[in-house]
Figure 1 (cartoon, rainbow, N blue to C red):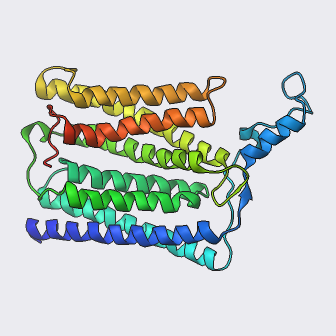
Figure 2 (cartoon, rainbow, N blue to C red):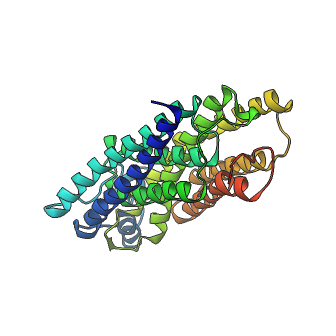
Figure 3 (spheres, one colour):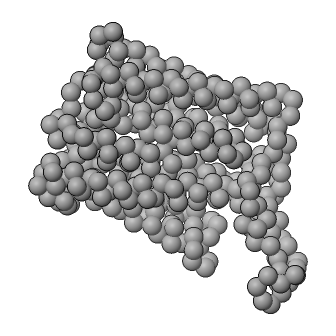
Length: 320
């Protein structure tokens, strides 16, 4: 196939991924709407702490359980009947959409004969793929289908935005990006961003979930998913920042130049470091830590999109 045909095929795969993600979202939403609800374990712990005095001394027999003790393993409602079938179909559609998303990236790469994230369009397509990969990879080990509807709609909207606002015809990149460092620095940033997106979705759901009975899982489960995703992605983002400095020295002759992208990458790093610090600091768990996490996620989104679109700098290669 010619480069033009491969580029057209890539565009078709993106459209297919959008549709598949959308219908997968519908299936996951049906599970949330009609599945059996579980009580919020975090709220149950809070009520038990009010009614039951805590014994002095660690590990006392009368000590009230913590949120982490009560929900050491994520537990969510198990759908039944039609909700169960919709959930299974949704999971299949999510995997097929993931394959279409991957095919879009692969054919784009073959069409341009380079790593396919040299502009804003390609970058957003790759981040959507990374976010869905994070969700499906987590689902293999833990039952996190409760995130499915929200991750799928996020990915579908992200791909739609990429096509509508950021689309760039397949072609060569600017000289500064024509380097093997794009495979190192940008790949690490994409993977970390996908995991941060999964954590961001869980954080938003944590804040909107009401106390007591709810169609959403417990706040403890949501907080745990977000924390695990960030613990895994933070070192990747750290590596991406360091690799970016090394690439900057090779391309521009300096490691740090206060370019807007560099500044916001560091601000994002500091924000997520603050979240991880908050998680181990007394009084900064639950809602407070989640708010810090979402502030960090907002910094990430501005760094990935806002800086490229709104601010001029050495990283202004968005082609929008």
